[in-house]
Length: 208
Image (cartoon, helix red, strand yellow):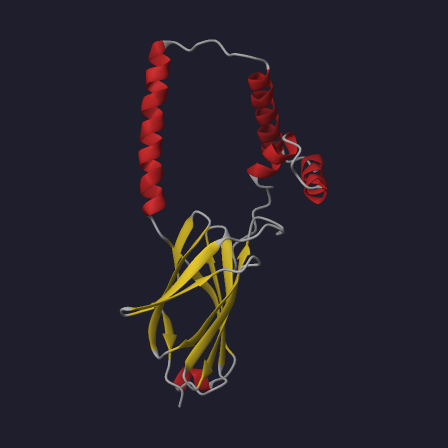
């Protein structure tokens, strides 16, 4: 079963609307969501507007020295924790594995097709593995789970087999292609925005 879509608009929509940078379709979606009675998003919206109003009101009182030291210590601790979090690599979950031809389960033949869907963090990777005479082509697209789309997707994927590495940059719509992957167990790694990820091992069988 695929992960549930996040029902709440992204936080950046609230900030972009306050700055006058949110598109009209997203403003309509955000207003409709708030009008539907989402208490969590109403609190988030009100808190953001209060913060903006306080910043625009003028210089704030100087906080006590002890409070500044505490804030600096917590900030440093948070930065260290963020560095460790950034070093972790998300492992994608295979949520669908469809075999278009029974032959793939035994011995791959040219033209056999295998469709797969992985999920990780805020993304899905919809891919198709098609076998050929020299190996297999991996065709896929990265799709965001928590946004309606419209923004270009920035990222890069790498396919590794032993010491061999193939790299491909994502197109703006999230599409990617690896041609002629030879037989073996391939590791697909990549980064989408700030998210680094690894797919489960991908087996390419020798065409026969």
